[in-house]
Picture 1 (spheres, rainbow, N blue to C red):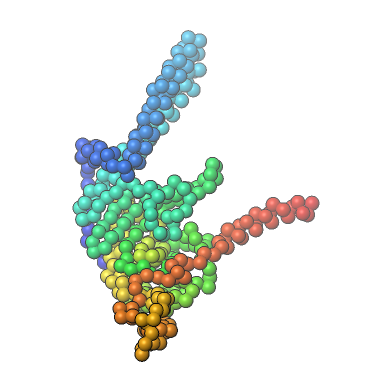
Picture 2 (picture 1 turned 180 degrees about the vertical axis):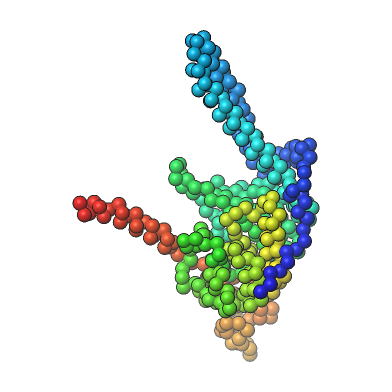
Length: 375
């Protein structure tokens, strides 16, 4: 299979030199928006560090060095000098990171504009239905680059936190969200190429929902679809579409849920790296040409569940509708094709337990209790 060439795009704003005045003007503009609180947060961190240096660090070091000099032991002042040096280093690192963040956001905004897209700095708790978006707390998406034609596409970085205190963990993802024309069954493609000891996805699914497809597809993805929707999955994942996924998205986990297609990666998707953009643009561009045929999919179960009325009875009562099931009544004119949508049983996959977690818990329990049992 040949890999489709990525669409051409202007990557110069990602690497070209920047005008400091333009960066400052951009920061001022973003500060006026509610979604750009990350700029204020970065400023607060830098201000706090500088304030600690000026209010606490400098007076303490000065007093310590002065006391050591009066005592005739200058070496006693070295620890105070060391503290000042540490504070200065922390301040410099905080300032450099803050400056880099400003420049990175400026570059991404110019990159978006140069390629006919828009930029949004930050969206707290984004209202997206993908499996990564409803977990944990402190959920936020940032550095969002959005395309609007021929359909809405969003490239972003996302993070959320689980646990608390010393056991808290921040999970980071890169994602691409593509708006579809119609709702589709919840289908997940777990890419085998990015898995370690088990799946890297934050959810697991019952094994009876696995569907094996033809060719080499199973070597690259494990596909899950709701029970009873196997033929629908085969309709959506025709051999040509499977080839597109293998060629362009084999290192990306894929989820179809409602009227969205998500591509997930454990590294930043919105980045200053032109190679990453070429990879993601190529993957989206390769899939985009095939999404129109998905718009023709209809769930026959919806037509079957239209309540029967007296008007539905008559000489054509019992006429079947094309699909996996026959209607027990004649649908009204206009209902021979089901409306867009997904029946309840196809909207979400059934979750399963994470066997890796179970195995780890069992091993820890055995290590903990076995010595006590044998003693």
